[in-house]
Image (tube, rainbow, N blue to C red; front, side):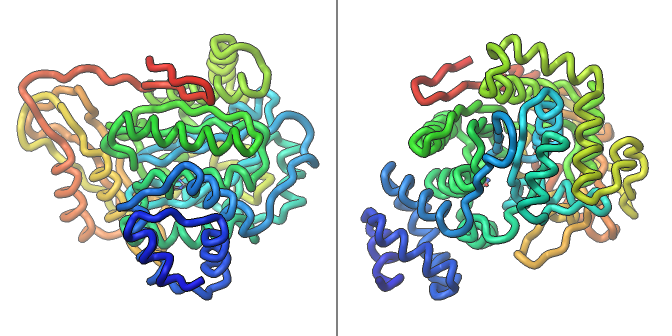
Length: 440
Ligand code: URA
């Protein structure tokens, strides 16, 4: 196999065979295929797409590129959840501990920030001492003891995705259905859970801007998961505005803690409850409505927060930050972004909010960038709100004042102000199972 020939084939819309995909994935992981050739292939896939069988073959080859986890050492039903990525999406930090506190095992492998979106691993690493790279045996022990552990793609798990993910992040090849579906599902298949709930985001801050594309991505992922013998469903949730009010790593951990106390923003709380209800349902805890009620009550009695603190402690972090979140270090500088005109917020370009947050230091523009965990923003005005000229729209946080000029310009450009209020948005648009799409 010559990588050049495969790029040429895909450039003209050809389908790669299982053998070709095998050789390509193995060659890339072994370092025999350089990044520049793989980047060209990614761009060809971006423009030419892949057929259903080709995506499944790529996913299985990626899953098999490293160790596959056998979770049989963990007692009980194991349910996983994965989001396609968004801005302010801290749902894992809420749902994981909440569901675990209700008796469902969550053995989760999460990712870092990608493009304009944040990543759970980066957020967790903002908790002093927290380790996301832990040995397999310890990972199992923690899940058995506390009900949940969240690790990064440590060791030799799905190395193909680890390398591809980092390359896609810097080559503008993230928002492609075959690449997202194979990236997420290869990790989910290798991670070994019995059930998988997918949170497929749609809107201006999602990789899938359009609802029908999000449904197509969800169908693709559910088909791959079901074909691999897992119980799988997807919720299509809104990412046309940032989720919650905080964007940035430790800022989002703090907001997740508030939500686990039952005091989080309404939109974040509702999306978390819906996803948690589907995870509990998948674990056989009752019908979705019953599970929703169980999750809602659990949010109010604080048991998820205790489980989060236990997980943080078990993974080497300092649990006092979870119980007293005011201990999180604060950014050295802050800046208030003011509305330049009066009216209703009729649109937020959520990806632009994510980019503004990256500019402040909360995400990476290059693979090797170091994060500033304290950087990011708090939003004070949201979609649908009325603003007067001079009202504070958001407060930005960074380590250096110089970062505010560009980031605040970017953030302001994200807001459209109109004369009339716009329609209220749904938080959950549809549920996709192997048999049907239910629209809400
Ligand atoms: N999350 C992933 O794990 N992979 C993607 O490609 C996008 C979001």
